[in-house]
Amino acid sequence: MTPVPGVSLGFGRQSSSPEPAACPCGGGAYGSCCGRLIAGEQLAVTAEQLMRSRYSAFTLGASDTKAIEHLLRTHPETGQTAAARRKALKESCRNLQWLSLKVLDCQNGSPLDQYGTVTFEARWRDRDRREGVLRECSRFGRGASGEWLYLEALSLGDGPADRKPPQSPSTTPP
Ligand SMILES: [Zn+2]
Image (tube, rainbow, N blue to C red; front, side):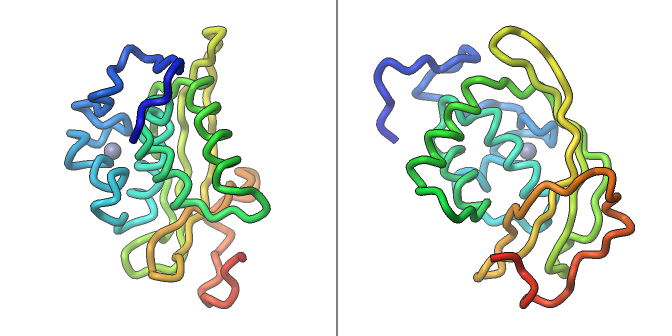
């Protein structure tokens, strides 16, 4: 929670109050949408909720430590230390400004499912003011305590609809 000296916050936000009123994901008020998930006060009930909260965390991560921690704890990755991942995520958040999110499709990912995919479009702008659209199908699964986790990005060519996720927890990726 200690502010890092010499770091440009970007996006015109104050370090003391980085939280926006409207949720970056477009889902309403930040405090009743992704805010509680990013603060760690509540777990995502659906894969789409987790996807939205991760998008919102990416928009806030340049100045919000909680957002970076949310991204870390909801995406298990082996082979890299938490410190290295934290640094890479902060850099990514500083270099890319995320402008808007559109959720295109959800397959499974309900409170009763073990897996789910969410297909979305996210508009971005980089430091050279170039803009683009990221189109991704994200795959989500349950962690050890039943919490939703982001697992991987699937190739959009595969089509999430005709690629049924495995139902057995034993096939969960490591
Ligand atoms: Zn939201």
